[in-house]
Length: 200
Image 1 (cartoon, rainbow, N blue to C red):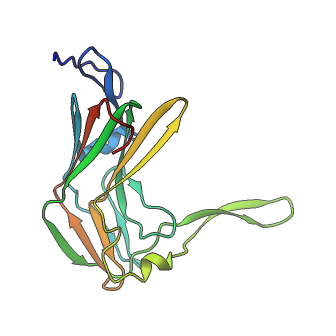
Image 2 (cartoon, one colour; image 1 turned 180 degrees about the vertical axis):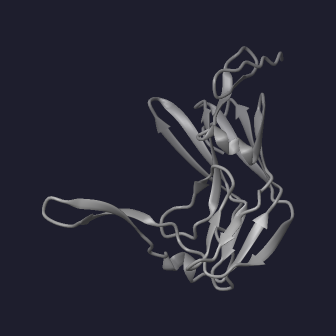
């Protein structure tokens, strides 16, 4: 089989007769400051060299990075997340391999949750948007590290196309012990195989 690689804005890899197994579309291209992306005909490798986080202890603990990232959901411990989007053909199976690498722990104190943005009425005609912190007890009462996995995958379809959102979680938090765990060399490989049923 002849492998043909072609590229478009955002990344396109074709295999065989030119039909792509997947298309690489970074949801935020600037996240590549912390994650190297290697694309091949039947796999994409996301290698995160977790950068140092700044721990702000003014009125509780918040984490800050020196570059762009996504974040966890409202109510969850506010941890940075690196997310990437892949478009996958319907007849392609996918699977994921994870190499978490080494980690180190750091006692940081109580980590603020990700806030929710809500509308607050000031009068019958005036309202304003404000941030409210509501810790999720299902997470903050855990005696284990959260989120407990190194990656998350969401699959969705829209406009006749199929997408995978792959999120890397190099930071985990232990609410009871108030400890931050950092995986400094997290590697996630997404593999693709043509001719099968959709999904892993």
